[in-house]
Image 1 (tube, rainbow, N blue to C red):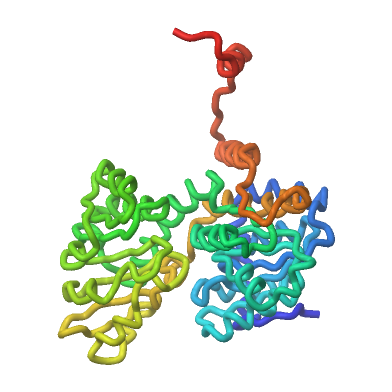
Image 2 (cartoon, one colour; image 1 turned 45 degrees about the horizontal axis):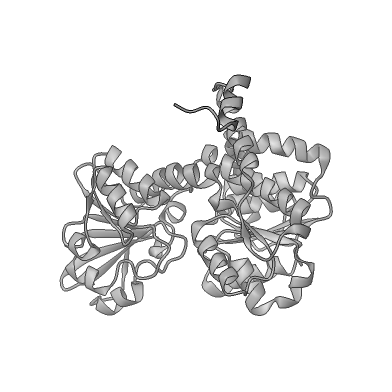
Amino acid sequence: MTVEHDVKNLDLATGGRYRIEWAEQEMPVLRAIRERFEKEKPLKGIRISACLHVTTETANLMHTLQMGGADVILCASNPLSTQDDVAASLVSHYEIPVYAIKGENNETYYEHIKAALDHKPHITMDDGADLVGTIHKSRRELLDEIIGGTEETTTGVIRLRAMAKDGALAFPVIAVNDSDTKHLFDNRYGTGQSTLDGIIRATNILLAGRTVVVAGYGWCSRGIASRAAGMGANVVVTEVNPLRALEAVMDGYRVMPMIEAAPIGDIFVTATGDVNVVDKHHFAAMKHGAIVCNSGHFNVEINLPALAKMSSSEPKLVRPFVEEYRVNGRSIYILGEGRLINLAAAEGHPASVMDMSFANQALGAEFMLNNAKSLEPQVYTIPADVDMEIARLKLEAMGVQIDKLTAEQEHYLSQWEEGT
């Protein structure tokens, strides 16, 4: 009997399974965790509701949790990030309920979140904090059974810390995003490569010689800037944080306000987690043919309502995921409806990067279950020793060996008497 679901087409399942298995080859750390979980069943009897990007890598995480004994259900964390063949395979081959269709409207998106919450989770697993937000706003009857949650992304952690600061957060959450093996690698290398992958797939343009404006200089933006520069682009960074702006300058990029970058940019990429980073007055200053996209979690960084009002006609879909707006005789192109371009027009992060991120998710769920009684309704990070173990497993899988401290070195680092 097929489990409950709402996916595009179950006939896509076979192709999805092949792609899930392909990604699994690049995820040795998660595979090692899955093998242990299958033996130990640390999540036995635990209901997990996950709101994540429905990709091949996520499928391997769901399978790992399932092998650990969890009763899992999955919905999409973004209307454009679902891979429909993967969703179909999870239902058909793994018997995991999935509620996700690429291109679903806002109403369907929240109906799917409601379906995931009807699972009455003990643990939530979020990418953007929409599950947690919905529980606190309209499904508070679920709070009694919830042990805790995990959060995958920078944007979600920002929301959760704001909730905790206001005293609104009702259960503990592990900020998976704040683990070094997540944000140093997923955000920098994953977002850096996959963002450019999405831009190139959507537009088929040459980046070399173009001026690429990167809004923000956090870990995601560092990766985007680095990869764009590596492909020959002239990179401009905009920032509001003096320290990050200084770092961008020292890394060799031009730094200026967005209003100064607007007339010279060919391609604009936002990755700040804030609202209206590209606004009406920026659109007014852009050159003909400017391409604008977003790699932050929510589609609020580009002020599309303002652009729509400025446009002399309805936006025209000139290529898949490329909409043309006409402003005072100029064309401005918006990619992926202003949503995550790396998942809207491409496949998201490479599996080898998500291997570490989802290892954090799996171990974060286990840590939450084992320690929930001692945790307050706050945002926590995964312990450093767990983070280090993930790094060790990744190096081992890559065939890389490192030095170990001698007893003498360990003693030297633990004492204070010896000096100059």
